[in-house]
Length: 624
Image 1 (spheres, rainbow, N blue to C red):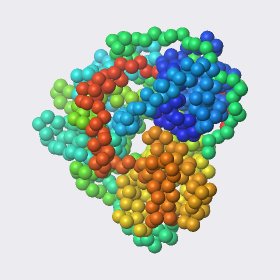
Image 2: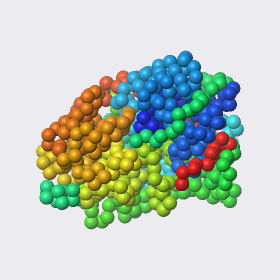
Image 3: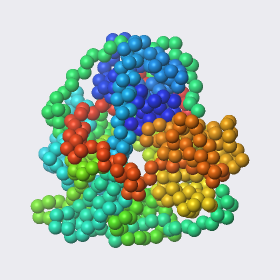
Image 4: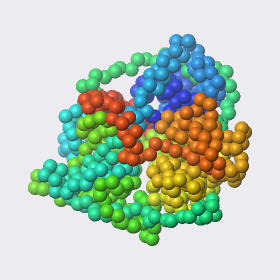
């Protein structure tokens, strides 16, 4: 939920922790969706009349539904902004629910949520936003659990296919021989081993937050992997190339009344339900032509025989599509994963220290034995001082379920790219995946990028936060001219591309709306307007440094340097492996035993309800 709270908070200038606190108080993060005594409904408990006035179709599926978490949280942020949250958050919360105790409860919970270490949030976010490690049809449950997955479950929120085992340190993922094994996140190769007595052929990958993923029992490891060809640029080459929506003030509260208390299952019951629950796949029907839509809140099952006519029509088609989405050839790999033409990449040794992007092939599944089918042994060690190996099953479940339920956007479609694409809002930009942002930026007429920098983006070398920042400015009406990414960086930055660009976590901007930064600084200037907009970024999207010739009182991440008179530099914490300070901070997060407890607890928490069809309270979006 963190990306949703933060994206909505940034768009509507509301502290994201307040949105999380309201969500906790109202529905226990979507686990108690009963209608209140006053008729309030959905994830953030809106009165239907208030929902009709302030509703937001935040995930772009054509309807604004209080039972969709993205729509509900964005609508809550819009309501709070309209009630003056940027001036008095307490007053806005009181407007949301006219009770003094409610205001104090929200603020206390927001303070507790805000007290969580940024590094812990980052490490967990890195864990849950990865790709499944095998790019081919795969299974990772034993036969008994697979049989349970075909059972019909009545009255349950079927979300987690298998249970966690606190004593487990690895998971076997079964797939056909020679199936490609891929990097689950952007990161750094920290070990490559062959014919190890215990691990066999193995690769260890460390992501940017410090989590380490081990791929062992591999059939083979490629000796080489593709990287973009270096492009040399001179200073002359570079020189040659080189607000929140308004709403009416609320006249009444957003929510009222009290809900029925939802039963809290024991850890044993939760684990039992998890073992018996099938994985869910989404089916999003097209909305009807009338304004209000009524459809049951149900989950689509995983079909044992999805190709049968009845199963195919009821969701099996999507299941088959997901099952066959795999890397079939090197040409497919270069064009779809790295977005490179044949003349734009070179091959380098896959060895310790290599920097790879998510989706890079790290190995192949080996042949099975007389007792075990062909498989990969997958392990995870989270960031932290002497962190132990944890049970990967809850994380693998999460990766599969995020793909299946399409929480952030309309199922099976990308409404922000391609024919019929819509202009995304600021919040929608911040919820885009790295792939969506890449496609969006490269086709966005409001963003200008020096030619070599476009190659950096195509090749996946640029941090998602940088891509989101570029589109964030464009969506804010501040069209950037990107003059510095990785390509062309220098140690001194004398050519206008700073050394921080080498990490892929920094961007230099030399023009806004075709007005040069050079000569346009000071209060009220285009530079000032842009920096103030960047200062509204929250949480994981908050830049470490915003460098120009201007600094701002009380803003610790702004820095004034005389050599930045021609550009604004926006920098984020670079990859974990290159930053010793971040390494020390990560190591102090959790003790080894605490990681085991945390992952075990995550596996037992009941999943929230995410409907795959619009509820009867859904309203057709008025935006095109």
